[in-house]
Length: 194
Picture (tube, rainbow, N blue to C red):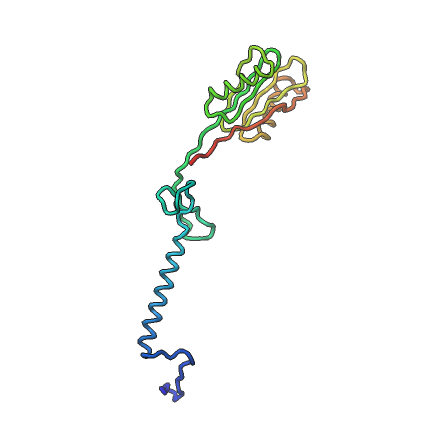
């Protein structure tokens, strides 16, 4: 048995002796560590492209990379966006007999206006005209309680903001004593497409 410089015998732990000596053990350990490292790299890249369109296998050039997880990597991951946003339109139509129509989610201004005019006519409006168009935002129609007073239409990034600003303008337009309230509100927001 080998001894150390202090004269204490160095005994290898049971189960660590390899036939062929320490050189074979060192080579096996190096091979095993290399295999573990290779498997780790293969597994870590396995999920690199899993955002794929329907019917497309992972790894295809049509697949997008996974979004970076928070706390992983260097923090500087560049994600190429391949989709696009389509704007959507909404419109409001009015008639002299106080019947109106609305539309939202149309892919063109013309389509939104046509849909609002048709909705107005279907509800009994005569000589309907488009009074307001908007895209990628929300709208609120504010009516005062004063007979013969004008309503107010306001667009904004949210229904709440459109209502708040619209009520303020309605009161300015019809007098501070006018009780203005939101009678219609909705949104026509953009649509993301791959």
